[in-house]
Length: 338
Ligand code: TXA
Ligand code: MG
Image (tube, rainbow, N blue to C red):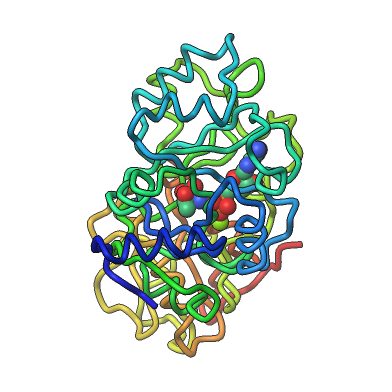
C-alpha cells in the first residue's frame, strides 16, 4: 500500500516498524527498504523481503537532530580520522554520503554481516527525516529492490517489485538524485572510496584533500562491488561508440541514449536531454526500468562520459550489463561479459 507521508501515516509506519516489519521509505538517492536497525528480527525480515544474501551488510540511517552524537552511540570515531570525519559530516550530512566506521556492540551482527564495521548515513529527504526524528531509532535500509535488480526511484517502482511483501510504502515522489550514496571507508588509516555515488570524488577531495580509489580497499568485497548488480531482466549491452543515426537502428530493440532527442525509436529513453550529469543520474534507474518493461528483447546503451557523476553512472551500467556491442552497419555485434 502506497500512502502519503501525513502525520497519521507516519504513526502507522512507526507501528509497523515496532512490530519488526519493514516499509518502503523515500530518500534523496533511491527508495530504501527500512526496518528497526536495533532489532535482529526486523533486520532478518529485510534480508528475507529482498532475497538478499546475508553476507551483504546494510546501511544504517539516522535523524539529523544531534546526528554527530547519535553517530557516536552506534559507531566509534577513530581518533586519527576525527577531523576528516567531522569535515565530511559538516559538508554532506544530511545527504548522500555513507561512512564506514568501527561499530559498537549495540548493532545486531546480522546488520553488518559480522563485519567489525558499520555503514551509516543521515539522509536528506524530508520524509525520511520526519520518520527518523519521530521514531527516534536508527533505520537499516538497503535499496528497496529484489537483490541484484534495478534500484527504485519512485514509490510505484517499489510497489511493483515489493508491494506484495511489505505492508506500507511512504510516497516521497521521485528521488531527486536517483543513484545511491557515495560510500567512504573511514575505519582504517586513510579514507577510501568504496562505492562511487551521488557525491563525486572531486567534490569530496575538495573537502578532505585526498581519497584512495576503490581498487585499494583491503575490505572483504563490499557487495555493491559485486560484478552483477542493478540489472534489468532484458539483457543490456553497452555500445562502444554512440549509436548510429536513428533511421538505421533496428526498431525491435530498446535504446538508452545519452542526450539524443530527435527521431527517437519507439522503445527508447534519453538520460539527459539537457546534457547534465545530475539529470542523467536522476533518470538512470527509472529509464532502465521503463525499457525493461518494453517488449524489446535487448537494450542498447550509449557510452557515458567518464567524468563527474558519469563515473558512478557508468559503474552501475557496467554491473547491470550483459556485455558490449558495436554497430556494423546492419546490426549490432555483441560480446558477452564473463
Ligand atoms: O543511497 C543509498 O545508500 C541507499 C539508500 C536507501 O540509503 N542504500 C543503499 O543500500 O544503496 P544497499 O544495501 O543497496 O547498498 C549498501 C552497500 C552495499 O554494497 C554493502 O556492501 C555496503 O553498502 N556496505 C554496508 N556495510 C558495509 C561495511 N561495513 N563495509 C563495507 N561495505 C559495506
Ligand atoms: Mg542496492
